[in-house]
Amino acid sequence: MDVKQLEYFRAIVDAGTISGAARVLHMTQPPLSYQVKMLEEELQVQLFLRGTKKITLTEAGKTLYDRAGSLLTMADITKREVIKASQAATIHIGFTPSTVSMMSDYLIRFSTSHPDIRFDIHEGSTFTLREQLENGVVDITTLRTPIVLKGCESRTLMQEKLLAMAAAGNPVLEKNKDGITLEELSEQKLILSHRYRSYLLSAFEKKGLLCDIYCECEDARTAMTMAEKGLGIAILPASMHKLSDQMQSCDILHADLATEVLLAWRKGRMPGEVKAFLEMWR
Image 1 (cartoon, rainbow, N blue to C red):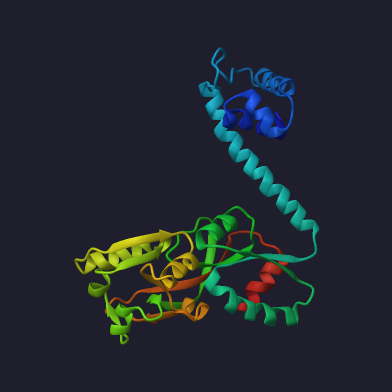
Image 2: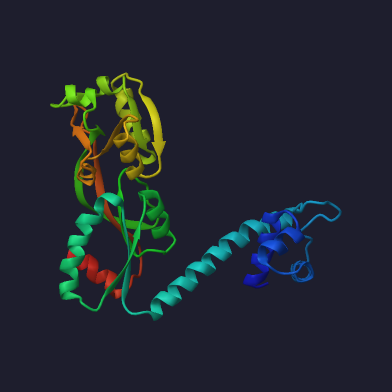
């Protein structure tokens, strides 16, 4: 049983037929059928129920499908780590949108004392970068709370308030330049990124309020764009106000809403260049 056989097996299941998988893999049907036969003979089990037009897995086939996914993911991670180890010292680092400026300033300082170290920058949402960190795609990354990490360590880089943001000239924020309450926000169409949903709903519920979540999205930049276009009021980290000159913002009163920027890395052995990066940050 090798990696290719597992790839072929999962492709067949995903396509629903051997002929469909052959088209996806750009190969003919007989070699695929042969690989399935060889796999069944090696494992001494039947993986598919015969006589059905669409692939139907036996219990053994279902188990192999699940296990094969994990094995293929691990093989891909191992391949990337081996390639990474053969390259010049490179830190694979993730930046959330609102931390690019802050981290770029730090990279400038770090490169002065470590001129031979290179950087592979990954940009994305907190959830995307968390997944990349846990799967070994990046060595270290900035993340936004609230977030749950598995097998990782982190330290807080900064804390900032969450603000109400809307298109310049928004009448509600114009009226409440000194700050807006949750009671007033509960009457508006709100735009949120997914990771703040539970946190903000809890804040409203503590006040005995319901709120109108008009739009939810994965990335805080998307929430900002939606608010900029006049679709509603977004609740976002204060630093994001700097990313647009077409937005206005105001404090959310009596709510103590905040988010932290974390620097996170995987537990255990790490490359020397990543250690150097962490040491200098300390």
